[in-house]
Structure formats: C-alpha cells, structure tokens
Image (cartoon, rainbow, N blue to C red; front, side, top):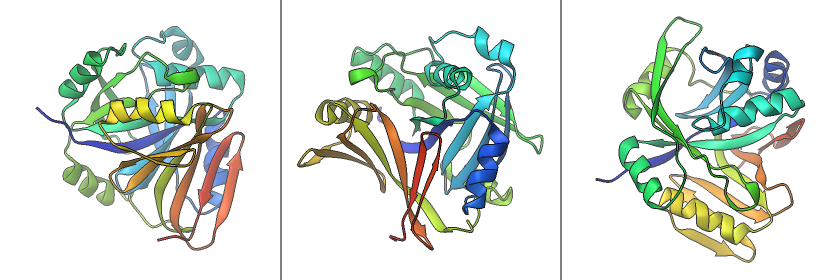
Length: 258
C-alpha cells in the first residue's frame, strides 16, 4: 500500500480570535469563523487557498481545554498552552494523507511515538458536520521542533474542493490571487531537521549552502539556521503588492511572485 501526502493546513495559535481575524482581513486575507471543537474546548477561523488553508486556533472553553492530555493531542495541547501563556505564533502543519492507516503504520515503523488514529468532527457555522480521521506524533523532533500531524478527510479532494467553493470558502482574496508557497523553519540544526521531515514525508531533501528544502506538491518546506526552532513564517505568492504582516510571533510574507 502507498500514500499520497500533501500539505493540508497550517496551525496558528492565537489568544483573541476576532482580533486576529480583523487584523489579517484588514490586510487583504479572508478568514471566516470555522466552528467549535467541543471535545477539545477550542474554536477556529479558516482561510482557504485552494485546499490548503490556514487555521487560527484559540480556546473557547477553558475547563475543557485544560482537561485533555498531551498524548494523542500534541498540536492541540501546544495551542492551549500558548493561549494560557499569551503567545501567538505558528505551530506546525497538518499533512493530508489518502491512506491514514498506512501512514500511521509506516511512522510507527520508523520508531516514532505516534498516537492512536481518532475520529474528529466539528459543526461549521452553517450547521454542516465536518468529519475526519487524525493522529498526532507525540515525539518532538530535533531541538524541540514540533512534529507535523496527519489527517484524512471523509471526502476526497475533488469533492471537498467542490463543496468548499459552493460554500464560498475557496474565494478571491482582496490582497491578490494568493497561495501559500513556503513554510520557513528557523532551526538550530537545519540539516537534521530536514532529514527528519524527509523521513516523515518520504520526500527528498535539496540542499543549497546551509538551507535545506523539501518539495511537497507545488509547495516547499525550507529549513534555515535560527534559534527559534519553530515554523517561523509563511511565504505567499500571488499578492498584488508585497507586504510583510506580523501579529505577535505570527509572520506572513506576501510576495508578488507567480
């Protein structure tokens, strides 16, 4: 069995969801409320760039959010900790798989501590039930770099794209014909970090000097030297005018490249 892997979405931890929506939408993005995750006690807002999207995540129910463990929920748990610490930043990315059981089996074979495959769901503002299967990697990578997590949606890509367009979620952005092109990771050991992500994604690493790049579809994960050991910023192509946006530690760079 094989898997097809794609960069599905990017997790961004925020402390005030509406303020964050207002800031980025004033700059030409188009976030809309996504709904509540009742189990986790969280809520989100989403902005789609085709099937790839950005998720702003915050706490909706403090008691529920505090209650669940790190195990099997690593990225959500980190977002909750950021909320209570007053930190706003990009966390990690979700990888979409078309065979989540095979992806799970393969990563376990690499010796990683992976959580169970669980069912996820939320009700969007229109009342539509959104469902998926998901699992988290409970290990951190080199120098505490958060690992990605893996998701499989209940609908295939073509059906999801059609539904998202009908709902008006895949739409024109005032800032331009935007799409997310690169995730820039600032890490203390770029070579090792890229090697670990390469194993997770079964993708080749291309090196140029001290920069290491992994291609995933038409997008790139770029690992460069830095002290943050985080996904540092997202680079967008297709903007009408170049602009650098920052809110807390969240950094988006809009470029006019095609």
